[in-house]
Image: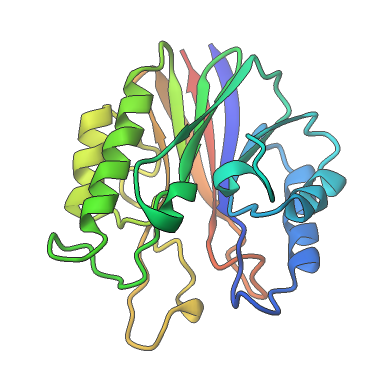
Length: 242
């Protein structure tokens, strides 16, 4: 058996302009550097400048997985780990236009596969079948499930999925990929309500999901109090891999 503590955080922060990037990334990086977290999955690390800020303050994470693109890590996905990395692969999610930038980063550790993802956002806050983003979400989650299904060992799937826990999109995805919610459906809304437009409801859209060979020992939250380091909560889960 192998114990592993894993975390996930969308690092963007709001608003887009004036988001105190360097200050926020310093807070985020030092929080993890001082923690017992073995593996951190980041989303929306959009440029190499973003990446350098994290690397600077996380020296104990000797292994940094990502796929290079012109301006930064592909898909904004980066995985930091204190455990040795055996392989890294990147898969592009199906979509058109700017959503072609979305993908799946798979990092192979000695004990498990770590899957980091960030599908298309839904700026409408409507996940019904009639919504303009529904088809894209369905196609991207189906492709993600196919990636997970093809992995020949235990897998941990993390990220900002941009679909809420109560949606049929999410329920169908975890059923297809045979995944278990590490929070057992008890995680609160993971997007800070303070950053939503008036009248919008915050949802749980960030997840840590595991395959059946992995036992969840504990699950808690990070970056929960203002001033917020990101517009998302961080997830931290301790696992026992059999």
